[in-house]
Image 1: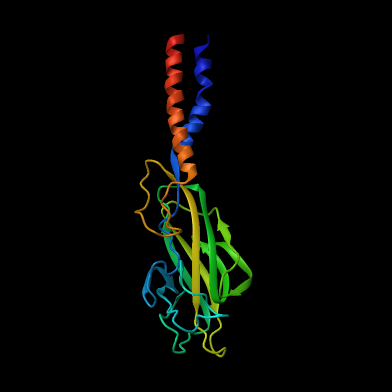
Image 2: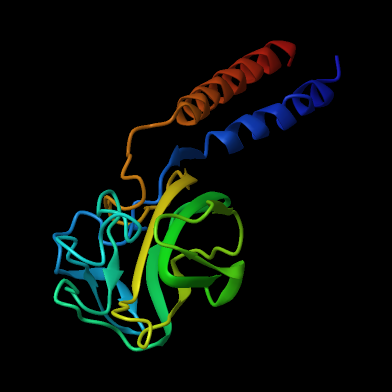
Length: 238
């Protein structure tokens, strides 16, 4: 028997299985919803607006209510000011809401980030790492939620940035604060042997293994088993 051919037939499936076993399914816990887990009128340290402090907006009055902003929850509205219940307003013009998240240790080809966003008054576009990732054409005016969309490319290992451009009409359209709300559903494979970012509770906050991780671990065990078996048979042939 040609033992070289015998051994060669096992290389491709073994390498495939071992490649699958080199990662496990997870979520991006360093990407936070706006205002996630924070009390109203507090600073959101993970987000900025126009390069300045962003606050979790007080929802105990206007501009929250029927036909206006939805209540705070899994995500909260953030704004340039912490409170608008006494008739405060913001200047008209563009407002840029930005955040950063860390993808160290993730397989970039597997990342999926589904975005849910709402803005007062208009949501114009989203940039990922400085490049246009999604355009709202025409600009969306919706205080509740925009149709979701998913980002699957444009990521880089290490720090990544998201920037949302919004437009506030401001006076003379009455009391008109700027407000922005975003939440994310995330999925990504984490590479074994590469330390991921410190655990957080961003994104959907789930750290439980997904079914895919069980399959990947099983594939790794199968790869090791087949490798041992192939070596044993090869020794018998030799």
